[in-house]
Picture 1 (tube, rainbow, N blue to C red):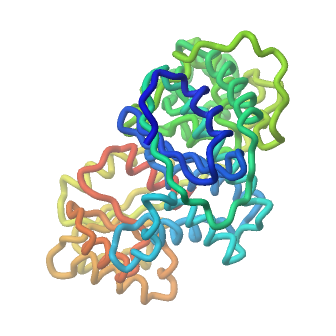
Picture 2 (cartoon, rainbow, N blue to C red):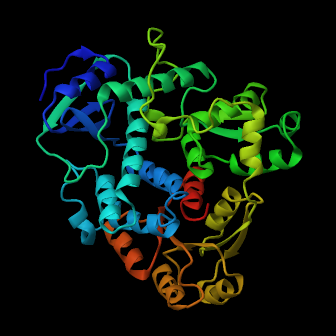
Picture 3 (cartoon, rainbow, N blue to C red):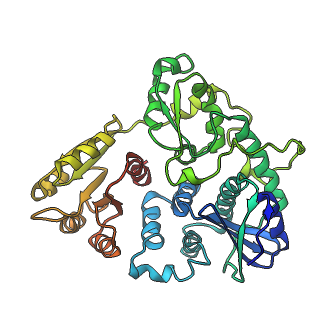
Length: 421
């Protein structure tokens, strides 16, 4: 354990160059940051807020180059590595020292779903996002713990000086968007189509409204295959004229520091970019026409969702949460009749309550999985039970994912993003 001392986040990162091979944990404001060092270089970084969600986003973005990283494989990864059930304990043994999501990366490479060269790009992008947030922390005391543990395999080795230069330049760009845009985890919503139509076509505004429905800039970047910073820049004119409303980051991302409060480093004028991984994917063009092209190219699809629950109030809540033209929602209260209705509808996703009379969610899930025409449909079990036994039973029954009541609209939309979009 190092002695507490007042220092900046940048100073702490610079000190990692002198660290022995291993892992340095930093605890600050209830967030645990992990920095893995090999030969004075950074080989991985993570923080404890939604670490697997972060990995999933970057895997989704990378799936454009590696098609094997599809939604089915990403769901499999979550069940294997982000599930606290006892039968998956073998993946949790080193979780206090080795980030669980890194185990998932190792598995993807060992099973040949992800080439090592692409694993390098993936790790570099994750490191960038983590360092970007860490550098926004105000000066103060950082509680550090060192572990003599090294990752079994590494795919990326970054000089701390180089990555600091790249990330500081990005943070200056984020800072220039403040005070309105002050975090990559803010959520933009289209609130005035009339104003937006002065800048782009009616069809583009229509598509824009369909995708801006509760996702933050980082999630939008994953969906659109764009750098979140580029999206923020290109949406800033619509935010400035009131066409788009920005909402504060949703929990737990509201715990992360804001980019606008970071004082820009005016001394650095010329910083070499680390690699094309960190380049703004939109280049120098950040005007409204660029974002128009992005949204105009998005395909329009209405997803068919079936919700099965014996509670009329819960069905009403789910319907209101998904009450947009993107979703065609079918509500079913009687589990006895559900299988026949599902067979005729052929939905894209099923939300299935566990605790129902006659045929419960586990039984119905098993029946769906036995049907040759329904077996591949994502099934999300919805329940008020949080125990690991319930999760294990859901997985045995063939569930794709698990949603715990009560949940917010953002939780449900994130589930839609994970399995459909």
